Length: 375
Image (cartoon, rainbow, N blue to C red; front, side, top):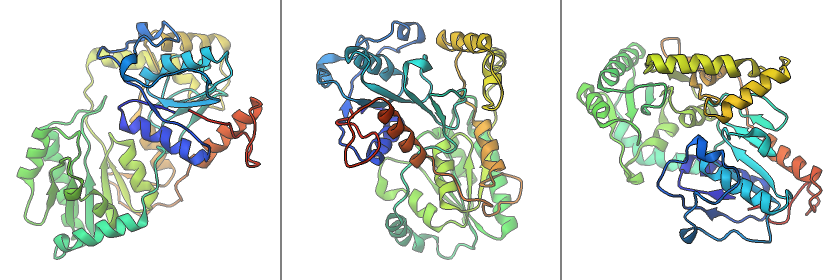
């Protein structure tokens, strides 16, 4: 598998590689400082964006399978497939420009990639399951600091600005006011965790608004002082800002009551128009049970390849969580989930095994489609 420096993307690739149970190597590529924009990516398979002298070598024998994520990886993995004479199979996360260049595209739930035979649309973000012992240990370390605060303990997991959402000091102060009112109505206490992406002015506003019964954590890089896992272990209810698919997924997998806190949009006229154009170009492809004309597909593909791509749509993801019975919107009652959350990892693994079996790669251990050495 190929990784770069994006922890979220790389962790998904590693999770799938480990779940397959096949031998694999990790190659961390180093890319140049310049932004690899769409018109440069249109050059096709190339190592032009790679700092070759700082990256591991890519040479024969070429792997049977490459798993990767992120747009900077795309020219590299397609170059590997080209060098292998088309033998290497490619599994790519997110929304690459040319869907047809990949044998399988795994699309996170907040990216509205149209259904295709080679696209797997995830219902929840792929994540490692939290180790119960780790949660128990974190809870034991922190419980004494929360003891005495009235229950229920309501954990508010706070992210930061992510298009199209804004996150400023005014929003943070208003959110604290609403969360405090909710906690008071429940007779409980508010436990707030900021994150790496939370703007400092927003953190300051939340700290300034905190009352003695509130606990507010200022994020820092020291994992020993971070109560995140203690919150997961100890909190009775959760409120998570809508910008983070990973935090929402993590709480959903716990099976605890969850509310999504809606965030204001930073909608300029230009972005409104661009979003409307994207919906027109790609929107009709988002229903798997609707016939798509070849002309409409051609138009959508062409638009995506020139930079009018499949957009990130957190609200679509939120609707799926609410309709699935795993969450509610903040302002409605925060109740336990009414259904078990889905786990798409076994389905992804089965899909890759089938892909490799259909490609005729040598099997091992009697498992369908196990390749010799995926990269």
